[in-house]
Length: 228
Length: 192
Image 1: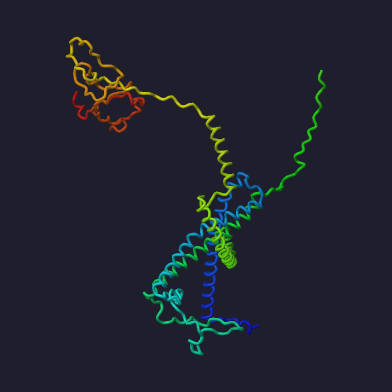
Image 2 (image 1 turned 180 degrees about the vertical axis):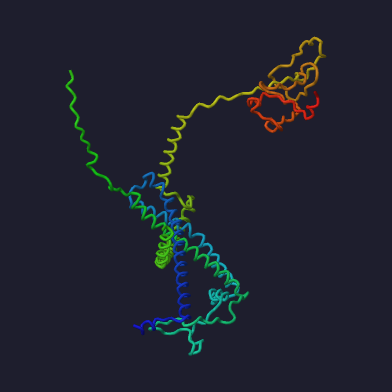
């Protein structure tokens, strides 16, 4: 019994490390929950547009069954996605135009604009060969490769090269276009989910609390006397 | 409790995020195909002279239904509308002389052909001249019940309160302090 108690005894350093880990874990959970709440709120706002799209046809009974509702909702949602994605596609097209014009002028078709764009950020040494054998970056724990330390930064980065200026703009345009388009796609998913849910709820007929026999009223009245 | 529930839902949605991400990728690929199809439809509509995004048949029907309902409602409202309130008309009276006429001197008979000033006929562009046909300047009449402002009256200093007088007992006078007049003369004792 005494041996067991000794084995779980923690030093001050261990206790501190445990507290730090707990705090980090709690902060991480809070951050994840906040991100999830934001995601949920955004998707709700995006889904509200589906209600606007389908309101009139449902209220006026132009569409009066769930299948028709879903089909029409799908059509309108597709058009909404197209109209939404016109702008990000245009932004992406601007990036492509810059890339084509720049390469026509310089003839450097083989260059990777993403590689050039990466120069604007820190770079890390991810290869184990860059580290001494006594202090490797990756270690094997139960057959899994795990990071053993923070990776070192590659010297000379971030840097700005004027000859890569076009690449910076191209990639910036493409990143904006991809992010924007992803947002549009998320809106499409939110609207589709709302349309499917509404197709069930709008045309739902419930018998909850209804009793067919309750309508039958028997009033035992005396018959009227015969007229003279 | 509600914030805690929101928090839990947030964690749930965060766990769902990878699946949403997969959905976004799938929709992203579908969206490119959809873009091309819709773009072709748009170009065809453009060259046919139609709207780029024509209104769907169902939407048009719904719009017509709503419009009919709205017209019906408006017609019912118009039928119930109250008659308009009577309008008050103010007539401006002009006392100016006729155009081009020379006003005779006051006290002289009217020359032949001279039309005295008419009431109710505007005579624009004529400057009113003193003499015949013009009214003397009038004092504006005060409306009924109007009391002109009075000059400020001389301020009467407040009388000293009886209760505050020295050696005065109100009970001696049956507490009728409001009818008692006292000669307030500090040097009165030696007058007799």
